Image (cartoon, rainbow, N blue to C red):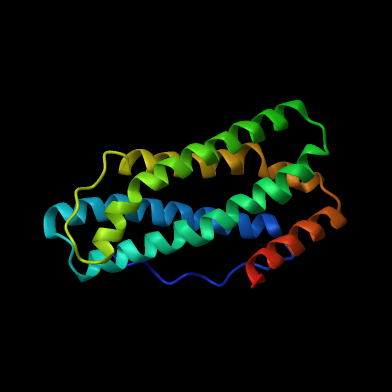
Length: 171
């Protein structure tokens, strides 16, 4: 149940590769939330559960918001310049899903914080919806949006990469 070590991050020269790597982490940590729920039912908030809860909190409170900003602030606006109606619709739907996913994430906070502190707390009914919707959301982005990044110019890709670096190095 302990999160595995992360592979080396892809080059920032390829922002889509980095976003895909983030999706791998989304899938892993969303799945960990499901496993944690089941683990807690069987063993309670033991050391392993506490570590898992801390890892999930860290990922979805720090990395996931950066990832959403990468898309909403940088990638999606660049892709909108392609003026492809169907793509624009997909991105609008995905942005709305970001809001829904954020609400689901908030519903898990008290449970995960209590678990991280070793305190028993009932798992919310939203754990499964959170995990499954986040995983499906990542897949939709990969299938419906990311392939269009190949149509962006080198300057646009460079701008997206620079913004992603700046977002992660801001003090």
